[in-house]
Length: 530
Image (cartoon, rainbow, N blue to C red):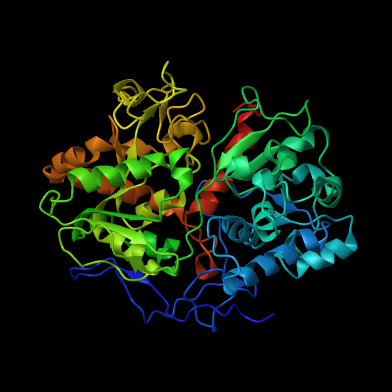
């Protein structure tokens, strides 16, 4: 198979001593691929292979005794063929949607991980695996009781995206295909071994096929549902389930773990910023009037009415830019520096790195890729805060939710294990922060000292979009507080990037954090009620 024919303008994020210290270096030769197909954008044809990571090692918090098995008896049309076809589709721009790439990198990181072991009873399967995995010769002979985890290598999100005639809940993929070609092939998915199985459903949980949405233990982009409190139909009424949230995959080589780890913590708050905030948005559409995206429209209306004559926020210009369908910029509401707009879509990350704050307003589901992108770029996320425990939760008031003290009130500021804070919606199913973001504080997905306190750096806006500007203006007057938030952000950014190529299995990253949470869940003795 030939390498993906992707753009040749490689972008590499570096740091230095100049005024643009989180800068892009277009001459970078850092190359990252997955198998013999490239998954990262802006690569050169001479890329190295992800599976040939030199001297894989185990990051801290991953026990050396941990072992997992990857099913090798699934037909190729449900595994390798899907991965090959989706990468070809990305390459040819037949598919431009970028949010479902996580399953591709996660599966290949599983396949190359030093903790992988191989079944001894199937010689053909064993030999096939030995040519593809890390240290296979040493790990070939195993006993069933020594396997901690069974990984199901079906890239469900990619399959749903690749299949024609998209329907909600991936209903365009036939039930019988998933049942006969995936579920019925899982020889060990029975009895007590069920809870040791891991499904790679890295899409928004509501988009997953009903057969897989609430089955066993699965990776998801969120939010997580409760097997006890959820009203969704189970694959097996007697079976409980658990969702483990992972970050979206950022395919810019400049945000690999080695680069994130090499940034001194001081750089996260000493790096000069040109803009007070940056916000990129697409064209408005009818969907924005009837779903959670409506708050994006409210924000644009607020800017158009009350910000048009505001040239600066806290003494710095801001960027508010519309992204065209061709990936370029469309002139719209400009900042205080008229005309100083980024011209290409790939420059969004650079602009984020030059900005203090980056609004991440509600989208189609509680988590969104933009949230993790801005963190990697060193920009402080700005979110709207909603109360999911209020009498007003199921309806909008007379002003459409632009300014509703009950819905947006001062709840949750004390940070309680049982608070009802959501950054998505005030609906009764608004999904709290703990149920929407990876390894969040009080989510019980990691030991308490390892969970991420998002509230330590995220700017929470109470009272609706009208309070975004005054909140940011007040913060811009307090550089000590800004630097504190930037430092806290810098401490956890490494957990939102997946190592590939030479970075695979070397650093603490999203993959190692995911493994740690899986191990914590397996060993904690809790059931799938979460």
